[in-house]
Amino acid sequence: MEFPSFVFLFSLLFLLQFPPCRSSYHAYQDALTKSILFFEGQRSGFLPQDQQLTWRANSGLSDGWMYNTDLTGGYYDAGDNVKFGFPMAFTTTMLAWSVIEFGDIMPSSDRRNALVAIRWATDFLLKMFSQPNRIFVQVGDPNVDHSCWERPEDMDTPRTVYAVDAPNPASDVAGETAAALAASSMAFRSSDPGYAETLLRSAITAFQFADNYRGAYSDNSNIRDGACPFYCDFSGYQDELLWGAAWLRRASQDNSYLNYIENNGKTLGADDNINEFGWDNKHAGLNVLVSKEVLEGNMYTLQSYKASADSFMCTLIPESSSSHIEYTPGGLIHKPGGSNLQHATSISFLLLVYANYLDRTSQALNCGNVIVAPNHLRLQAKKQVDYILGDNPKGLSYMVGYSNNYPQRIHHRGSSLPSIKDHPQFIACKEGSVYFNSTDPNPNVLVGAVVGGPGEDDGYEDNREDFRKSEPTTYINAPFVGVLAYLAANPNIS
Image (cartoon, rainbow, N blue to C red):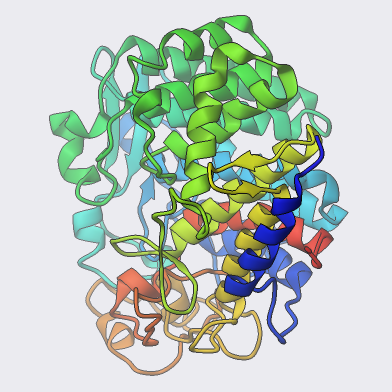
């Protein structure tokens, strides 16, 4: 369709409030490479010979012994030494979605490294379902772990394994794991079809567990104290059932999953119009994902999902009458709670993906009082990215190792303690406190890590103790990989 003339007028209004870029130049390609490299610093298990972040070494090598199974590998979620299955699965889904949507425009080396990062996670996620009628959801006691400031290589805290046995529920973790494995099967389909098939089979198994034994994993008495308050299921498990089914539909093209998301949308809350997307709440991402079937496949039985996606996008447009997103004075999307940049990266990802879906079908976004062209969604995402990379009141890159001005004292055990290569002597649980309390910069640079970020006033103090602002997480970086891939290939959006 052709865009009416008032789209041009809106363009001018939009650009006045959100200029496409400032005078600074951003090396999106460099940031992309570093955003993927970050995942090496989060690795658990036996590290490979080609490990680039050489200050890390093997860790968690006995994980799983309590259940006589191998649960080595996977990622530590943030600055601690715990492997939480729920956010790890979401991280994996977003890395895979990044490759699915933007892998074709990634430089070959970055695409290859992104697949390596995905496989480090999926190899672990496959182990989560290695025993019949059981899902392993977590390794490590966070309460004990968080009382120590210890390198992962030195861990002597209990590596408690948290498992859920049928018929006890774990719909959230199992549903997200199904999504992660299904999405990853698509990412690997061309380069490793055998592995892709293994992932898809396991995704089906994970979804069956999620759907058959409905409920939140953190409601189980043996899980609650380990998962909460860190990664409780606060928003309910229903979104993960739809999310897992939607990814299985996309990966397999099986009509049974299409029927599932058609028939269960209302009962599982798809019409609630929840404008959130992150490790706990999948609604906005689900709506964008399913909208592809409506826009490109004319699946009008799924129209309600597209309507919800449109509604969400319109909340992000300042000139829209339905806009209600909050921004800092410097222009960063802000939501209550810590680790705010997780919202900026995940929402930016959805903006770019939805813009592409609209573009391919020559459609625009109707926000009632304004019609928004796809590039306006891209400009909004670009502004968030540029803020993160340094176009902010602090003039600070919130990605470690990018530019010459970035956080030096991030809340991260491995980064802040001397490397085992430089200091091979054991550093016990409480002996690390001197490094935690030090005002010195971290000795090991966790290249590519995006920290939690500034507060609602754009304020940020380079303080290791302030974990809400200074701690990186895998699920901040994962969607950022896709966002940076797009901007590296399309730096001059207009």
